[in-house]
Length: 174
Image (tube, rainbow, N blue to C red; front, side):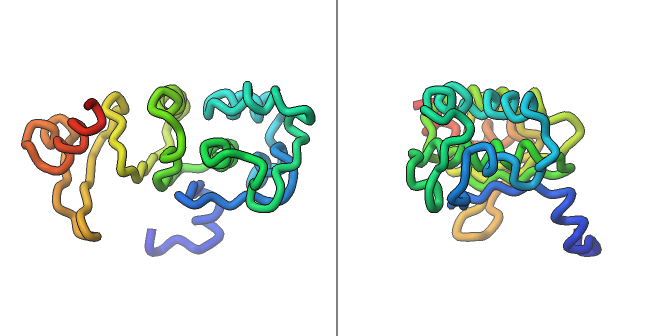
């Protein structure tokens, strides 16, 4: 990664920050940012994957609804899902999701993560979260405390140790 140019990073990386930024434009334009060539069918497929399509269909202007400055007309969960949809619409070899589902309920999160797992393909995924989705299949887990790595390893091993990851799983399942 250190040897990659900024051009390579911007073309091979798709990032969803915790605090999303949306343009004062339509839902479609916000989704297409980063991949203007995406077909309408792909846009719908991604919107369904992030559990946004049905809500957008209820708006009077559908995908042409203007979201306002920083997405003011949308709920926190809708903003996060729109930003996630935008990231997924962009083909990348690495997706970094930084606590981008914190404003959605657990059932919606589960549906989205199931769709992400189905879409993963050959891409690598880094999921940063405070709420561990117990059903999601992680290859490796790194737990941080105060910015320091305190645990890392395979999920099943960490779950059995009684450490931070194990406690987070218990909280999630409580």
